[in-house]
Length: 121
Image 1: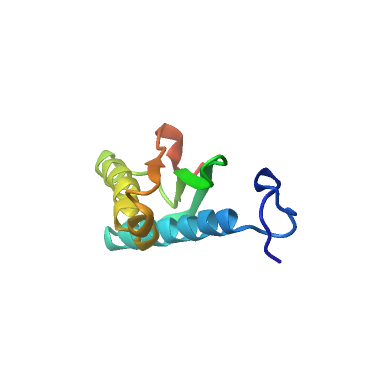
Image 2 (image 1 turned 60 degrees about the vertical axis):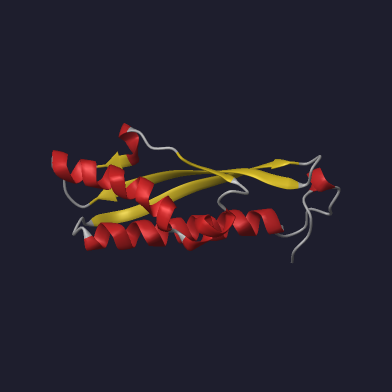
């Protein structure tokens, strides 16, 4: 079921187009990141991303998309691998077809920090 969110005077039943866009952008970002890491022969146990859209309800316009990725590795990374992963995190946003489709109309931000890359315990 699809409906508008309450913030846009919708029924808020099921999902809405904004959630679908966020999900699509997140999936595209993760797939692209996975491909880049695989090509760089960096083994990830799990890739995750939290993606959040910001909307200007007055203009009925999505203004910002924020990706917060997490890369869980199968082994402790070398300094070189850590640098390569950080680069891949940024590059994935630039190569994702969905991001390329909305860029220029929606601000896209990738939040990355020390906690983004998780080594096995």
